[in-house]
Length: 347
Image (cartoon, rainbow, N blue to C red; front, side, top):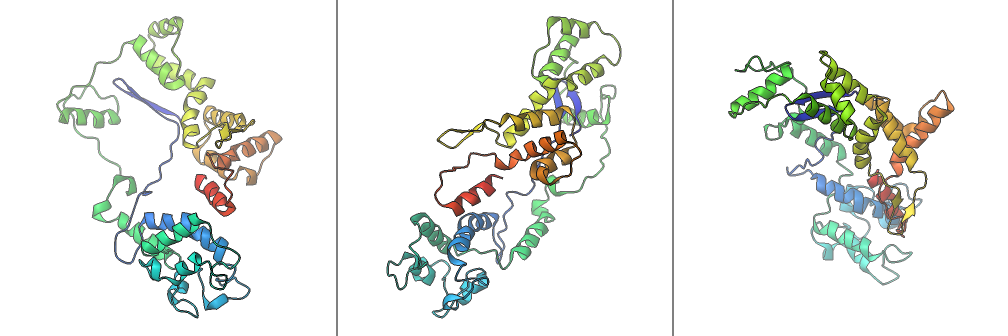
């Protein structure tokens, strides 16, 4: 989570660690493969139903396979059981599976222990109507297909390409750039016929540093002290002092808390997490300690499993795993399989 700063005219950029998930919206339209939306629908809506309601009798793990039908693979429902194929993709009314879950006849309804909730029946019907997309027999091949698309010219996005050292461009105003980064910025400005703005005066520069780094305005005395400091490293020392301020973590840790969906209560009933402040403080302290970003992630995902040398370290790592319990999950959900999947979805 190394802190870096740079000004461009009136803009201050502060990087204290960031996460980017590339390709989250990638979809594959080629014949024989599934889109990310289809896979997402199956994993969130269909697989939990099949696991919870059907696998006991219709899976390889079943003590006794009923009716010769397996629903734990795509090939299983395509082949079907003793009565034939279980699903006709695109035709819900003709599919034996849909007829069974809709039936009220005790001799033919599935599952035999009782009719499914309407919401689960509706999900299965919708799944069949859209062609019963099922990634279970071809998840690896679909994943490889998606990865192969990254190198395709139509998806040749910069986020998927390896880093490439670029030569700084030539610029007309050769005295303005102070670093090679400035030359890239200036080249874009000159291409649009824009001249860079004048350097900010020292009081303005001080205010920008305070607001951007700690979110608080400087006092008149602090502005005067910086304005009167004529040493070449005055700005660097001011920035270092602000980065070491406890308010830096409070200012920049809030961005991670937003990403993690931090809150001190959950659900419509207002269930309050009285100890939620411990995770909030953990994030703030991680920024102020300048903790490496990979370690920051590891502690939140698996802090309870990481080794520790002191009780304080153990407590901090346990507080970090609060990340796994955040999110506004509806704890009153009566369908416990759905609740478990909702919790995983939030994670």
